[in-house]
Length: 253
Ligand SMILES: [Zn+2]
Image (cartoon, rainbow, N blue to C red; front, side, top):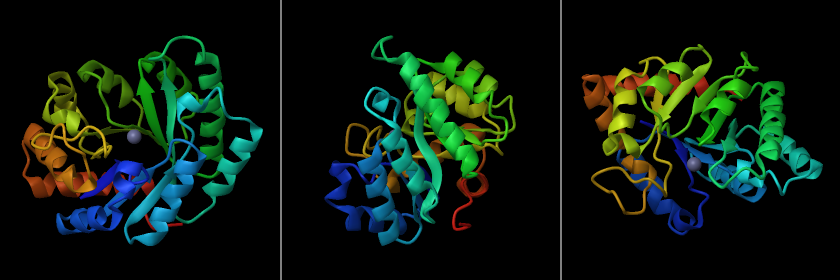
């Protein structure tokens, strides 16, 4: 199994990293991505990736950084992109939940980071909240960059629009264990462009819902996906592991 999106760099998980990573291995999770949201969390992701086999870093500035960053921040991010532990730029994107004030700044930061990903031949992990149309429009300008819509929370119609282009992937979290419209989207998600994640410590899947999430629990997400696809667990695992490997090119840098 591959947990394509966790925040082992979150203080809630940092305290028990050895135990959390060991449990993931015991449960059969061979690869874990640790995803940053600002410079310090991205640097922590790289530190953690250096400490454990099969753990990789995703580095980037979350849209809520849009009113804080400057040229120095982007330059600092760029120095991280060449490191061998880094497999993608993320989580980046647009988040319009808080209101309209910083939307223009968010779009500028988003586009600047996609351009960096393109320059370093890295895929992009997208955070999208209440900003689906603007995200699709921007992503559409970069046909050569692989994108994944992380913790996809849309319905089947939105999913069809995401996967209409071959460079776009979808990652499902624990939401597919409890949210009907996301389950409907997962059911029709293309077998060759889908993978799974925990988004730990958030979004724990049933039967751990409400608890602190951790990468081992990606097993419950994958069980739900296998069920929705009507395939056995081993087949769902082989498909999603293969897709994640093709997307993130683990170990190739
Ligand atoms: Zn996340």
